[in-house]
Length: 85
Image 1: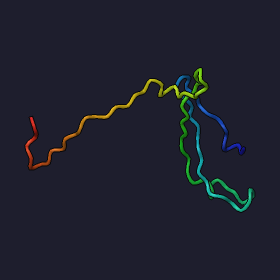
Image 2 (image 1 turned 180 degrees about the horizontal axis):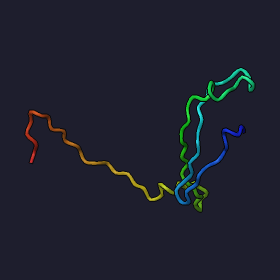
Image 3 (image 1 turned 90 degrees about the horizontal axis):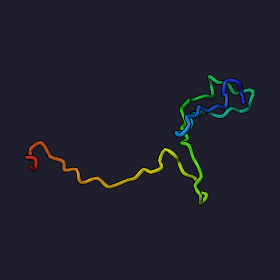
């Protein structure tokens, strides 16, 4: 791994880790590869912390206990209509 691209992650215990991701275009050879010509974008990659439950399933700590429910209808009132009481 080149010195300009360390393979490191910052970890927040109980939450997850962050690392830098790189988008690049290919070069004809390693010698033809340059940072200025081939690196297109840098971005942050987040990986949530995971543990394993008693059944061997991986559980994302950040989502443990999260629930989803359907919201009630959102009545849209047009400008020329009166809102319902």
